[in-house]
Length: 155
Image 1 (tube, rainbow, N blue to C red):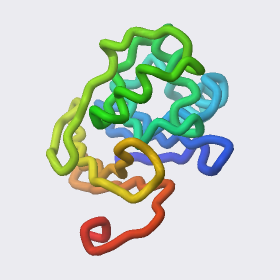
Image 2: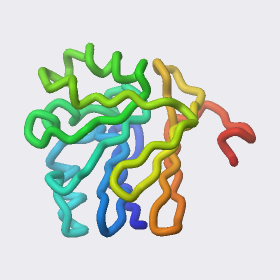
Image 3: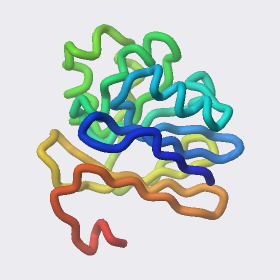
């Protein structure tokens, strides 16, 4: 499994995680151009993405959802409360809300050959999560904007 941070911080967050067969983004809180530039540096582009996992609805995690969705129609995975908040954000413009795919915390789901688990975190958002992704016999976990942690997150 491969992982690359494209951006991290209060100005925007975006991480690539993939295998030879599946390519995912975790958050898209920067411009489409910056995301494309980051992906191009590893010989990928947005058209190669199989899904986007959203941790929560703050703009530094979702800024490019509208423009990416209008052009590429990539499925967007988030908890139901986060999907609801995203679907009502005027800053994202119009996009196909059917791309929003609600997920459940602590339930494993698959995207291609990557298994994904979402775990609740503490943050001032509707239903924020971090993600653990499993592929190629490896595990990658991505947690942002955590107010605190405990054994539930650590495991």
